[in-house]
Structures are given as structure tokens and as C-alpha cells.
Length: 237
Image (tube, rainbow, N blue to C red; front, side, top):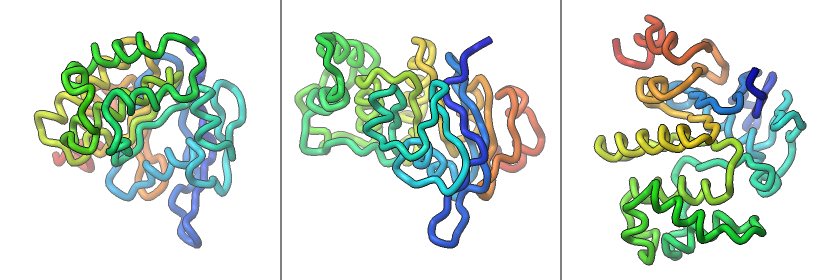
């Protein structure tokens, strides 16, 4: 039986008096690609922020590798192997591609950083071509690739991706999902938060559906993809 890497139980998050996340529970097992889907405003990003310590949780439990991590800061979680690529990418725009990747390895003390940069370049050949280019001069899709590459430099045990296809051209969306699949096939456990339900479920092992701050459905990704309720609500059928 696969090890449970990340387990969230009864998570509640509030902004003032507004309950944004209302008792969400889910888990991600070793080797899985789990998709958390839902409409804009469903609470997906808030859930990830609470998991990664950038938004306080009002209630519930968050366990990573069997340990309670609720209340820990994101810097501590990155050291433990829980790494997020945030919505909006968050690249260091005045630094080069190579410098951004080096920043991803900031917490590391080993001597394999340069070798791992080359591994990232193997996944993202476009970044290698422009390794000395300032991140701020790149397209949105290229910056998304860089943000993902920078996260990989931290050697994540679980990689959290928040809306990686948002705002990208159809061609770049195809590329990003191809890369997400590649990262997973190389052995990284992934939690993918996406509005593009069809593409997310096609890649996933399992899925959870969020609506108005709650998980309303869960199961094997293929079953969710073929569920009439999911297709009607999220796939326009």
C-alpha cells in the first residue's frame, strides 16, 4: 500500500467573517498525481495557501509525511519537501533564468545544484536556450515553465501546482500539461489545482471536486471524468 504523503482533515479557512474553506479533507499518496478541480472561487487556492502556511487555518489538521505541519511557515515546509508553484508564477523578474533556478536551490547544501539545473534544462529546453535572459522579459508560458523548474530545484517530495495553465495560450497550455505529466512520470508526487477540469482529470490518478469551499465529490480520475454531474458542471456538457 502506498504511503500517504499529504493528508488534510476537516480544514477550515476564513477571511474575516467569511468562511472560504468549510471542512475540506483529502489525501495524496506517494507516486500519485491528484487533481483538485472546481470553478473560480471554489476555495482551491485558499486550500493550498493553508496547506503551505501562507494563510492561517481556522480548524482542521494538515499532515505531511505523517507529521503535523499546521502553522509551520512555507520556508520550513520547503525544507521538508513540500513545495508549491503559486498562481501567478512569482518569478524573480530582474534575475536571469539561471539565477531563478539557483534561488530554487537556496535551501540546499549539496554539490549537485549545477547538475540539477541541467536536468531542469532537459525538461524545459526553451529555458536552456535563454538561460541568461531576464525572467521578466519572458512570455507568461515561459515564466510558468521557469516557476515549475525553480520548484523542482528544491527537490520536492510533493509538488503543489496552483492553476499552472491560467492565462496561457492554447498551445502553451498543451505544453504545460505535457510537462506536468512528464514531471509525474519521472517520479514526483503531484497535487494539481486546476480550473481546466478535463485536462487535469485526464492526467490524474484520483481527483477531488470543490464547490463553495467544500469537497463535493471524489474518486478515481477516470470515473470523475465520465460522471454526468462533473461533465455538466465543469466540462460544458
